[in-house]
Image 1 (tube, rainbow, N blue to C red):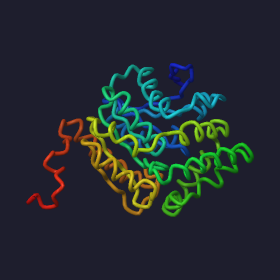
Image 2: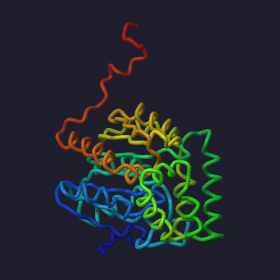
Image 3: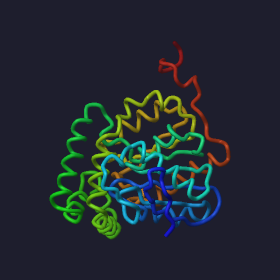
Image 4: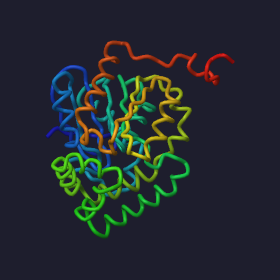
Length: 293
């Protein structure tokens, strides 16, 4: 198994398939490197497709020290994987926790991003929800400490934005739930407290978003309620962003509807690779509805 090593000595398990322009996938809190299998099989036919397990997710290292988990480290770990594979630039696709990491990668390492796909990004992002989200992160960590990962998976998998996945694809959902139960309780706990619970609100990052010049696709399911308003914020604020909403979809969109997810991402990448991805026309930013005033 190939492992990348971060600047603080954490080993990250990574896998790749195919050849061509590099395309790296960054998983969500309830997923791991295996969550991107439908994308690796699809995009590996045309790209050098890469996935990796975040710190805290076996077979990557699981640091016991909470201080080694943060939003900044999550973004920099993407760069560490690229460094290990000898890649200067790549398309970056992230879901949920991975979507936040992808966005912050764009802030911190813009020159290394050919494009960004920020999917399912927004949990706890709204200012009015931050205290509630942090309280839920603390409660999640306490549950993991008390009951362990298998009991956690049996409960967490049935969240209000994941039941859509079970309804559409019971077999795929069962695999997702089983893999969630194979995670590290310590790694999941520390990720909740160090990454999820401490990340800044998207509404505090509008200056960084407005300065972002990397082609960006915002993706969300229309039943992924915590992500809808943040998705609009990112669309409105990032001058190179487009927004696509997947109908009748919850949070786990790359697994819930992989065909649609792959099509949307594939069309975006094709435009970027062709040099045809636009930046918003300043004339579209005037306050007048009709342009007559």
